[in-house]
Image 1: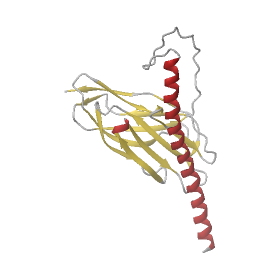
Image 2: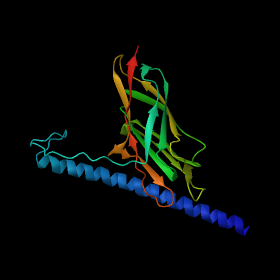
Image 3: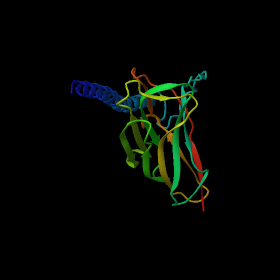
Image 4: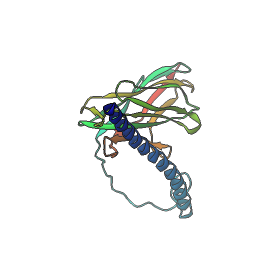
Length: 215
């Protein structure tokens, strides 16, 4: 009985840590939205238009290449028929071995252009699916995967991709139009990958998923 109680307490403490980490991220996201709006207002007063263009000549900036620890990418058809459902998968592939406590995946899309009928989080890698939310009113969907049982987190080997979510996507635009899905890293909600134990964010690269609408 004591062993079972100790194991239960350990799992409870671990669950509490990961949930608190996620809560902090959600609060941080809200703060970032407010902060972004404030900066936008200040920028407009300083001579920047609301659409992001400057009334003054911008100074040249140096390009800084971010070192990443993995990649989030899409796999799906390059062409889709209007009003026909298609499967699109989203994967994460690390460059080296990683141990993870969880992934908070946020995807941005344009609801007038496409309908996401279903978002099915992958089973079998992380033990807990905390969120599977499709939010067209916010132009986004969120999938949260957590590991609550293993103290060392989920081990993912470098170069091996894991499935995060499978989407059912239906384009709404006319033939010839192009549509995209994006991994969100902005004010719409930031995608986060958490290192086991430390809660440190794993850096990653990503690209838009683009497809064309056909008859």
